Length: 205
Image (cartoon, rainbow, N blue to C red; front, top):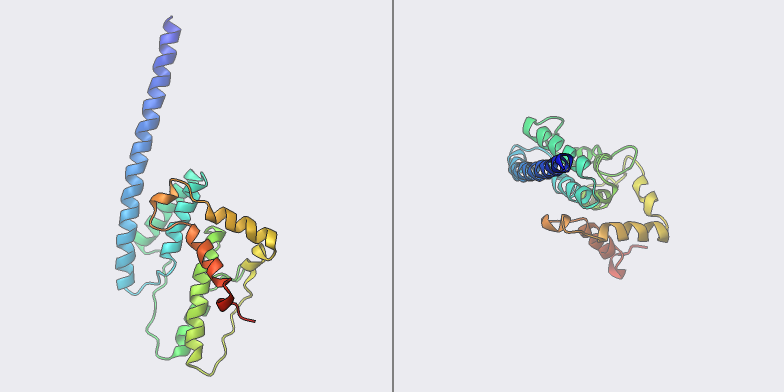
């Protein structure tokens, strides 16, 4: 009888600890997310390159939605520390000529993936930010006589270079669970933008 009571007490204590830990973590995460948006605005005002901010934030939503809780929480804390301490951040210089701006953005390309974002973030973030920067580079080169030449091939597209691979990728990013749905943006935006590119009027031959 005593053993049974002790077992019930232990189980109840563990449940209380688990719930309390969840509440503490939840409060910490909400505080960090709020501070991250504040830090983003401050860094933008100080001319730091923050174009990848929204995509990195969507990374956390994607990881949480896929059940990668520890990875998401660790990534969130590391990113919060990085922005708070301004570690490893790029400051956008004042460009005297268009070519200087072109060179700045070309240097953001990852040599291994060809994407314009760090390869440590989930693959689903590669497409949109790369398309945004390439479009910006194309606009810049329109005003110069120099044709746009990327430094590296867009190797990240190899992962979706067959109908089967593309379908699996779109299915993955199109599903949004209840956790990710609480975020301002979800991975579904990547699927929508990829499908927009496939519209007849947007296809270049």
